[in-house]
Length: 556
Image (cartoon, rainbow, N blue to C red; front, side, top):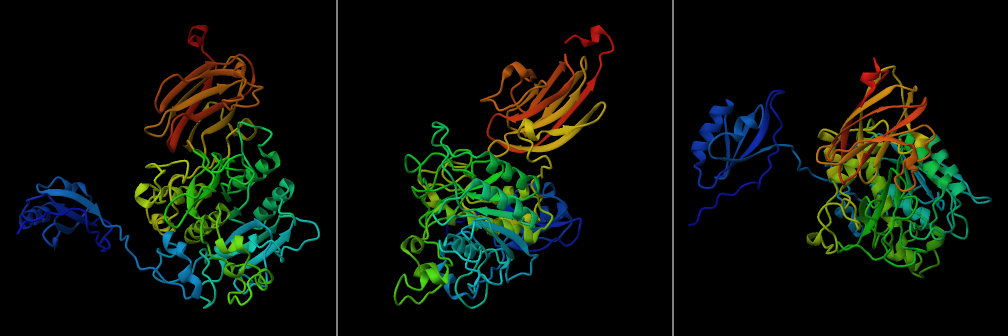
């Protein structure tokens, strides 16, 4: 019989026996004798070896290097105990929520855990507060629409979104909400004609931040069209409000849009507010893994995808009582108008991501918003032809961002070293530059992301005749650049900046940069770190300022 030496098919679930040792799985090279390799590994580690058939071993060791150099070893894998039981909700309609399994909603827990409540604000059309799935999930609400209570929802959209996020779990009725630890904050901002005032939206964002929201869900948007300003719906008041929420540590999640009002479908630009800095933009994936034509594409602002087709959720009781005579599912979208029975749109993808973010915060309350966003995106399942998306490419793409939401993987990743947090998160422009103080200079550690945090701006007070010298060590494998802008600079965005105010810039390719400039006037100067190529990670920035000791020393 032909013998096969298999590698990499097994992951053990044995915890480390001590702080000094961890459990490793060890693969054998093709043709190697398992007994001889076992003896060598046992000698190298000083621990007994357990055989896993004829193709792998299990052993404790201080580090993988103890084992990898042993003759006959093909691979070494540290046990991370990554296989776990998942609980199944008892809600009868959960079996029809196909997307729960697709996003691994409950895979991180063998039974429903007790987690710290996390507040998620739903900015939408209000909610049916009497709905049995939602009435105990709401902690506060307010209407920002004249003469209309937040507790009524004649549109139905807000109740649908709220149900996806926080419908009561394990209550033996209806559906299962993904964010089972969520306390809802309801902000009604949708007028009776379905439109939203940016002013009402901004006031609702400030209200949600004041009420302790960790996540704000915005399942709406306006057209973005960089080629036609008359079509573009950018709002400064919306941008300022979102920036405020981000500065307070809130994760803002928004639908990238359904091409509504756009010149063509599919549309190649994410809408606002998804296209604003630091907002987690969410696109849709269909049940077969394809990206629906309604889901906006965007190479930069589409961050992650979630199911957006055949979504089942809650609807106001009044909206389902007469729409389908004889329908038994009152209060659920199956009994609602046709547009809700189909349950499609990026509006219904975003709430799944918001719920996933809330579960991360509930599991680790100390987590920062940018860390949660990184966990959700970097542990998403890459959408490729193998998963049904023939137009998607390997890695990040314009249709699905980093890929399909995987809540289970993101929660389990909390056990690993966390992505670096950035306390300077919103310093993207001159108006919100981080002020740096220090008579001689300072060292800064921060992060940069080509797609969502492309540049950081630092504000430094200089006196005429001083020399500033700055060194940057950017993320490995990326091209980062350093710029110094003069007093009076109003924008450092490359498309609109006035380059007469540019005092200096680095010239080297790659991630290590430096500049040295003797300034001619006193005032605030702007030191800018910019990511020039796709990539992300932490960087180190160091600057010093001084007066020259002599004229000779002042020469370049």
